Length: 114
Length: 111
Image 1 (spheres, rainbow over the protein chains, first blue to last red):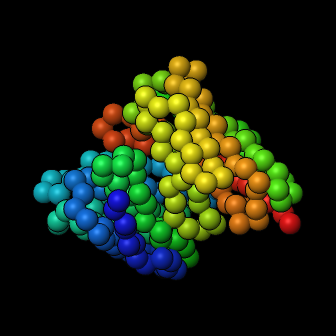
Image 2 (image 1 turned 45 degrees about the vertical axis):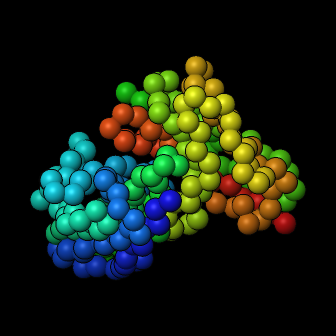
C-alpha cells in the first residue's frame, strides 16, 4: 500500500507569510487529499487534488488561501497563504491505499502562526 | 448530511483492561469504515478497514465490527497496554472518495 512522506513536520511562521507543505507518495495514486485538523478538533477535508486538473475545494476553503499543486501522480503541495494565528493547525495529506481499500496519511505538518 | 459520533470522548483505564470504543454514523450508505490511531501532534495510522459488505476485521489485539443497518461500529482492544494510549478516530467513506471523521476517543492506559 502507498506510503506518504510529508514535510516539514512542523514550523513556526510569522503572520502574513506563506508556507508550502509537500507530500511524496511512493507509488502512483490518482487522487490525493488535504486535511486540516484544528487544535482539539477532528479532521476536515480542505480539497481533493487530481493530476492535470485544478483541485476541488470543500465549502469554506478557497484556492487563493490554500493553493494546491499536483504536477504528477506521486507528488502534491499545499500552500497556506497570508497566514494568521487562526491557521495554526495540523495539516495532513492522504491518498488511497490502492487494492486494499481505505486511505493512508502522511505524518502531518504542525503549523504555528505567531 | 452524514455525521459521525464517537463515544466516549475520553477514556482512562488501567493496563490490562479490555476496551470498547464506539462509533455511530447517521447515513448507512457508506463504502467502508476505517479506524485510525493518532498520537499527539502526529499523523494518522490506519488500524482496520471494514468494507460495507463485511461484519468485522481483526488485527492482533484489535477487533472492529460494523453493523451498517444500525449505523454502528465498535473497536475492541484486548489486554490494553500503555503503548495503546492515543486518540482513536473512525471515518466513513462516502461517494467521491470523501471521508467523514468522528471527533475521536482519547485513550489513556496507565501502568
